[in-house]
Length: 229
Image (cartoon, rainbow, N blue to C red; front, side):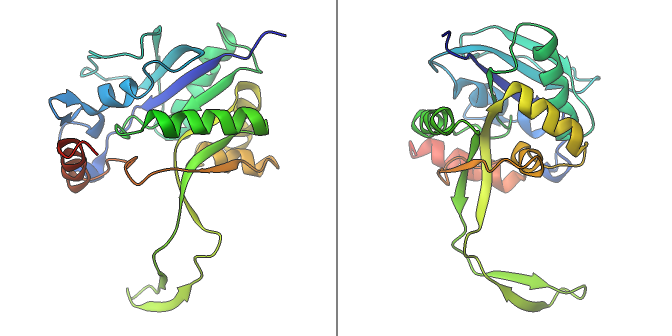
């Protein structure tokens, strides 16, 4: 039986309003390279990677990839939400080179510090489990629920809570159906799969795999790079 292939999907159509710059966060420079270049480089040398699909905004004029994982890179027009952009990439794969049983890894263009070890542990866990899964970190901070006046109303139990990261990895066919049913407002792929009755495996990740959302996040990523962390 032929082994299922793996595809990388990277939604990169976001404007990044919270980043506070005219340049979208995925195109900001991190250690002299664009953030998205570094995110793509995280998949260099990944066994079985058949190709990459990047979803861009329709008016994107800044995409200039200088570093790729060494596999074919294809571009599609994304949407106004993450789910719409991922769905556009999945539809391209479904109508073209991929099979429903192929694995798809969805990774944020603004997560440039994913380690090969974490990536490979996710792949191994998902392929062994069969249902798919995601990198995540257990919540260790005390959680508070605020009222409309900005004051703490109660402390929320952190037991069993995890912070989702990417990559998130699922079979192409199942993920496509799940996102289609969940709609454009769903915030990540695992939420869509959960709504279908799947129970994605949670693979412990690393705080290093941070998502750049604000200018402070970019500064933190610069510090991690300078420390070799």
